[in-house]
Image (cartoon, rainbow, N blue to C red):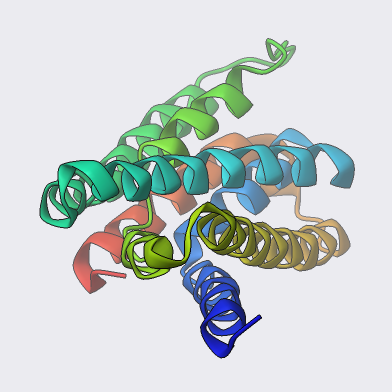
Length: 202
């Protein structure tokens, strides 16, 4: 196996891990887990599933670029990515308003929150994966798949580690306000993250 066959997957894993440091890749999970009282297993499961959706859409765009042309795939990916902060703000706003209404005995419908997060993250592909797929195309499908898997692994591992850390920190802090208005606070935090991502372009 030559140097390129090692370098591209390693680069993909590194880029995948680093791009998740942006707060919109992990803070929504941590905030909702704290507000909903999710156990760590549920928070991590949701993170992994949403991470899979996030990278899979990116991989589909990258593979489409092999036949449709890099410019078209990057254009589509860029348009979707530009909408992600707005969708994050919309989701956070709706969730915050829902959290403010009086509901002492709320019953969460199983999977609704996770489903919304999955749609949100799947609509936000990471276009950085596309040129990596293009670069590996000359070496055939084994290297393309290796790049995708490496990017997937780097992304999900980093997201999970950040959510794990935030989850542990949040459980150690107990505030009366968060216990009663956790959903509203989580929604407001998600809106803040969306605004920051939009303004800073991260």
